[in-house]
Image (tube, rainbow, N blue to C red; front, top):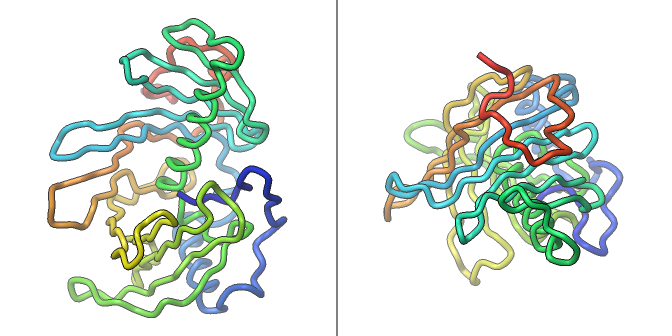
Length: 261
């Protein structure tokens, strides 16, 4: 998934350039941000704690947990490797440096690098699935008015997002479906840079928008396709003002709910 961070060797733009986007598409993105809680609330969002879970036909295919300090760029990443061993990565997402632990023991030297890279790539992907509507005016994003589309009797305004040389896959394209009543993104579709030519866009509904801290988030995404039921859900989802500092420096377990009862 794309995100507004430079690909290796690239220099990200300093800011969103409105001169490279359609005015109407920018206006729609602004309506979305306002509906989500507004720029002030988004910029005040300090810590985001969430699980990224992929389910198909009720079976869990993947589960990983992120605790992200947006202000300092610190990430705690909890996962399980192919052998079922718990893995914890404590990462600086700006420098991509950090520490990796497997079964509580620190992974030393070059053996840690793949784990650090996996955590970074998962963070890029998973935060985009959680936060994409907040990132419509990130540096390097271009917005285009893609017209309207009727779905189940409701009219949606569509905005196409394309990217400069940012993120891990800058050739991706996303269409945001904006609800004309709520101004929230009820659906997205995308074509990824590695998709075969003439592929049809992949489509997902974003469901259950609700408030976490000062912002709105959608805890469920459902694939719109005929062959089987696939969901991405966030059974852990918190927006926090404070987090114990040692959660980012030690691999000891972190509770599913940091905020408490």
